[in-house]
Length: 146
Image 1 (spheres, rainbow, N blue to C red):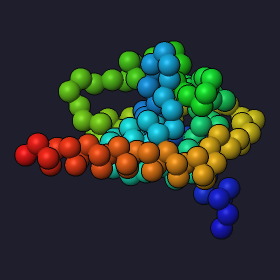
Image 2 (image 1 turned 180 degrees about the vertical axis):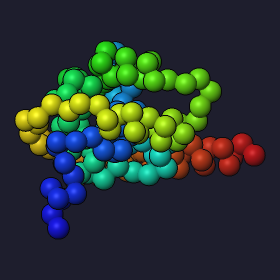
Image 3 (image 1 turned 90 degrees about the vertical axis):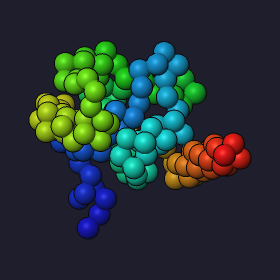
């Protein structure tokens, strides 16, 4: 079984929503290390390279994410509108993702999306290392305060 048998450009999947939820709409956008850290916070897991690249290909092609300069990404108005329309106050991140999954995966998806490798394995490894190093540094700082 190949990667293309598992990941599709023709339909939405949970990882697409998880990725979109991990990219904020800040003016400056989110870099890969931030996307990985937010994704881990929301779903207690690190994105696979295929989830990042297939997901980003679909999200950008369908107008939910825009690519900015210097490797940053942010949600578009279309994405913000989706979250506003389907938002629920005082709900945990994990609950939100699973509540929104059937709504998001039922959205129409444009045909003709072409896979693009937005992140290489080395870039992903570097971003994961940056994230885990920062996490360990923060944890050590907390331990020193107690």
